[in-house]
Length: 233
Image: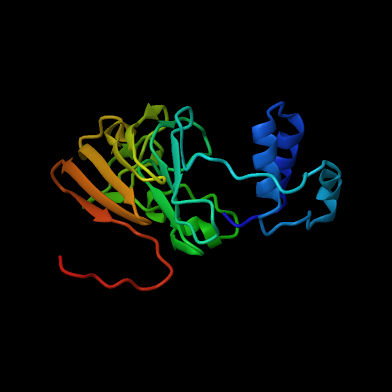
């Protein structure tokens, strides 16, 4: 999630190709506010020949559900200290996609919760262990799971599609229910998993309900920059 030339290049090309004045204005605003003011690597310099425009206006929307790829994005505002989050719940079909159905990331001036892939060299570890989600484990490895050899961690399967129901609120707030059960393709270890999310006043509340098969346990994972302290239960 660190900004790099490729992010700037993508929006420069999009701005160049769009026929929408509104989209072009939003692109100019974004390009003028990101930390990559120009390309850093020599092999990308030619992309800066595309005009970035001046000023512009931020988008008006604070919530976007990209249904085709199963990603939700929401933010409290467009100011620099806004709180931003993303959630994955939808089709899982790309060969390099991660097993992160039900996972979220949260940002406010810095990462509050983000996949542990963020600071790795390649960021391509697809395992559920590296994401902010429930990890389902069995005492003994299953003989073979959908992603390859047996593992004690129950795997999510390609060719599945989780669902997400969203009720938008004001100022980017929302309530959502994600049904992640399909991601496990009928594996008896995970009979059901539904994740409830409430985002309001720059705070995110996550609640899970699930039913497991014999010998399976659930672990709530939250990748955070400092050791957390648990309050109450």
